[in-house]
Structures are given as C-alpha cells and as structure tokens.
Image (cartoon, rainbow, N blue to C red):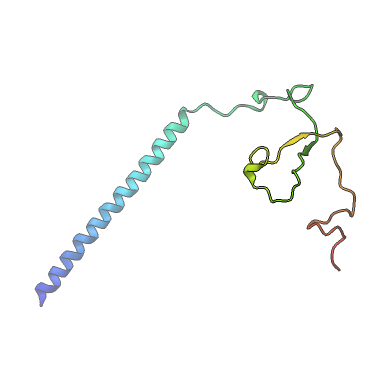
Amino acid sequence: MDTVWMEMAAGRGALGIGLLVAGLVVVAMLLGAFALGMRVKRREPPPPDPGEQPRIPDEGPVREVLENREADEVPQGRHRLTPHQLKGHGNVGTRSGASKERRRWDKGSSGSFGSGGPGAR
C-alpha cells in the first residue's frame, strides 16, 4: 500500500512542477511584453504642447458652408416603389434650402416622443 501512495504522490508532484514552470513562463512573457512596450513608448515623440496645437483661422473654418438642406421629394404613384427605383438607389437625396437661418422648434410644438404636448399628467 505504501508504493501506491508513493506513485500517486510522484505523479501529482510532476504535474505540480509542470504547472509551476508553465506559470513562470507566462509571467516571464508578460514581464517581457511590458518591458518591450515601455521601450517602444520611450522612442515615441512626446505629445505636442498646447502652444503647438493647430488653431482655427480668425476668419473661421476654411471652406465651411453654412446652409440648410431639404430632402428631395419622393415620387408619388399608384404602386409602391422599391429602393432601386428611387434616385440614388434608395438613399434620400438633398438640395440646398431657401433659408440660411437655423430652424428652431416652437415651444410646445413637439414633445420628446412626438406627442406635441407637455406630457402626460
């Protein structure tokens, strides 16, 4: 009976040593990856100072167009249209609107869920 226990202990001991070695290999790889990352980080240029950041010109953004866009009308007909029958293959086209002012919502004209009212009470 003593030899059976010795064989079981020897088998488990080898497994334990193998797991310990595998754990040490994983830890060594993680430490190596960390050291490599630190070396790569040291070689990168430092982030720019606030004075080196790009600035918007005094005239405003370059080539900026301020306009309202209006959706193209969907053709009306007797039959349902599929996307490939529409202009732009189903993507709604837009055109420049007549007004250059930003649209503002009137108070009470639309609720957060389209109810148009102040909400249920």
